[in-house]
Image (tube, rainbow, N blue to C red; front, side):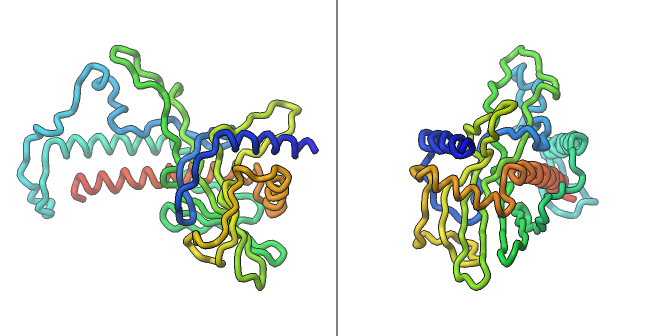
Length: 289
């Protein structure tokens, strides 16, 4: 009964803060804001030019439009344009890659408990497991899964923050759960997310849900696109008792708070790995290697 009351409060919060749902394809990957305590995090170092805060605070700006053009390197053989700005950009990227690798907490991707098998396709991750004749699939994409930084910009003359004081980066992707039964023509699909207004709980209090169901629908099994012609149940105005049963339905299949915490840890590790790879590819492109 206490769990139901907690979820009833969560449903009321969703009603007051829900935003209209946009057309989408599975999986959705719009950012949501939260910072799960158990998720692996790292210092916020995303803005390439913000790392040079000493120059930025003094009004200095790199000479992007007045770079002196150098003759193409004979050893390069690419025939492309090479400038002093390109050289400085490549050196900066080299330093950025070294710093990101220093703070990388997971050299290999963390394992999910509960018998989930991971399949990667670029930035998209798919977790699957079989349970008593049912197949449960959870899909998410790490693109756009980092919430924006709302901290105020450093004012001119203000001392730069130390790395320890920088905000932490946590990947909180939207994720889609697909439950398929043997012989069924359609799968029951849940569109879930990590809400901004996640309710905290203290010691001795009932644990609240750290993720929420946004929409529920029956969709053709294995179809990558969400068919708008299928009826979709939006949970914004859903009876809390029905919503509570849906959350219990997912928990019985291993999708609970523990799963959600492990998913953010996995997603954060994947996102950071892909970010470093992007920087390395960018460096190779700029340096024409």
